[in-house]
Amino acid sequence: MAKTLNVSILGYGMMGTVRAVAYEAVTRYYPSCPIKPTLYQAFTLESEAAAAKESGWDAKSDLDAVIKDSGCDYIDVCLPNAMHYDAVMKAIEAGKHVFCEKPLAVSAQQAREMTEAVEKKPELLNAVNFIYRRCPSNVYARKLVKENKFGKLIEARSFYNQSWGGPDTPYSWRFGKTGGTLGDLGSHALDMLYYVTGMRPIELCAMQWTHITERWDPKTVGSDLAARMNRGSDANKGEKVKVETDDATRIMYTLPGGAIGSLECTRNAWGTENTHGYELYFENGAIRWCYDDVNYLSIYDASKPERGWARVLTNRGGKDFAYQSFADGHMYGYRDFTVNACYENMLKIAGADEEAPVATFRDAYDVERTIDAVRTSWENRTWVKLADFT
Ligand code: SOE
View (tube, rainbow, N blue to C red):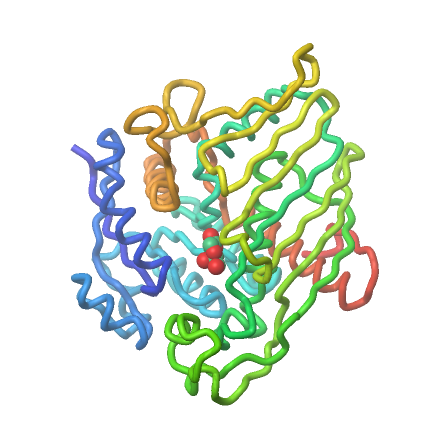
């Protein structure tokens, strides 16, 4: 019989709701999971309280009380980025396992303090929701690179592009200092590069761009969704707020072993709803993945006489591919990856060996260091060394 673990979720926006569903599904997808997560309490921001209550939560508004509640074993932080630091530090202090939405923090310094604090308590889970690690295609890509299938890495290209950041989208925390595209989307692309290749940049050079410098004040145009659905209509008559962060970022970098790479992220590329992916070029072949075709990994083996891309279905379970599938090719999606993430966290707490390692605070700290380096590079219009950012 699985041991139960009481999970409290902080924040009930998109991430909080997806996570609540996922915890409930863990032992249904994976009946052998040694720990059964059970929903305990939710803290909600004022704007989220009604939806949380309707979905069955006894939603609380006292953040500290939810974190410290003695019945809670595990805190899942799904709050806006700027609130992660305080909530996580309090959860560590209270001796709770912590799973935090990405980006872990809003600066490398915060991430370092959080990492150091949690590493003093090795009995606690410290994990960050770099969700795309939980897609079987990426677990498979990592395995191919680890096995040195195609030799030395020569070039890398990563991208994470979306299209919802047009001029009609009103201001929200995502357009404030702590909510930019680099932290939101670029952090995923960086973690994916680090996860699949095991490498971090040595030097980098970056540019960051704000296409839309002022946005509608949500107080005068209504909620984000209402305003977006009213594109071009009267909803767009209101006050404007100054944007304080990037709409788009580009990075060029060098990697250990002589490889080079580039990374792009934007919220302003029409047609790319959630186009996250990478291309890795090795001495003897290549690997390509994109969320648009999420259940497949493309591989190119240059040693084969019949050259061409093989589109490998990774949603099939069995010994070669991670995670369970109900039946081969019954395609996976975002909610399934979230179940896998919550499942991996339970395995880690139970001390099981991991096939697809959880992103730790230290991994997320590396991402934050890179983000700081990118900002400095653009501010000073210069190449920087990652080692100088701690
Ligand atoms: C932004 O649009 C967003 O919801 C990110 O915040 C998530 O991290 C990403 O997985 C999907 O897009």
